[in-house]
Length: 446
Image 1: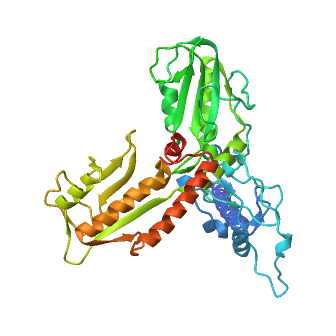
Image 2: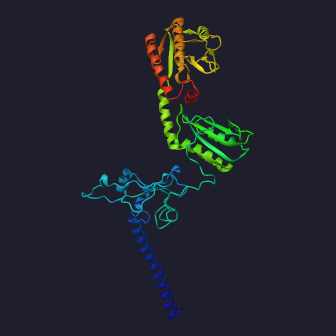
Image 3: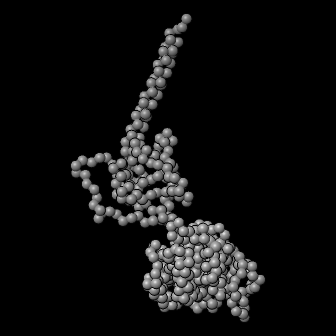
């Protein structure tokens, strides 16, 4: 049987346990309310200087791989004016009738751009900077912000890496010694401290990949200049490289010129030499001017002999007439008239896909085309007369009609007008110092 003391102690123990449980429940309720208040109301974000709320978590997104900045984790983007208005409407509370927008003339200047074109955030901005990156949930931490925000600063422009050790680059003008043509080439020179046997295969391969033709010459001590080979056994005291300013793919670009000089600079740094690169900006302007001129005189004349309806041409007859005019069938299935140096003056091709074959075979076609590449042909007026004469003879012999590339009938009158215009083209080329069919023309219009 329990004594009075035991009963009192039991009651006290029960009351104590109940009090502890009640206290814990009260504390839990209190902290839950506090957490709800903290995470459902706006507070100041220390990174952005903006009031943000957990309600806006869905407005953040993770950048695709192409937009990630490997140097600093996630990238900060300065929003455009349209993006700013959208974000302002999303982040700010709606205003009443007195709401007004900032006038366009008060818009802030664009943010300075950092390394790689990434805008650098300003210290204070009246409009929000959009932050894109992975967001942690409330359960993970007490702050809603990018995971790197407290440890990784925004990307900033850094100083370029130091140049490799080498002799100073000379940038003054110089006269080429190797026979390069400074009228159509940008020429750079490399002089060695001491002539030595060097492998040039990697250097020559590098310049070939620039997208513009490059000629390389080397000078042996006490001797003249000679073409530079990839596996030469000669020791050179100097090299000269000439990159073409323009061709049918367009003018030499700043990127191509920078890569060209960088290849030579790196090679000189490794081999012990000095590079002379003339003024690049004037060279690029010369390239643009030369390309514009070449576009004006780069003309391809085409004349077509068309068959009349239900009267196609026979391949054997075409082969006979072409051979009588001095044309020879090439491996490409096209007839060519060649000069003494092996350059094509004009060509005769099948208008249809099937190529010509030796003797004509069983080929049947509804048209043949004469082609004349104007700037690549020397004594072009004489060649034009020979080509048009063959076209008229083919039309008469085959029973067809001679038309231009617009389908208009060709006669002696309009041929004479075309011949006069052709003479004007050749006169302009001579004034520019580019003789049609000469070495410069063959390189520029390759």
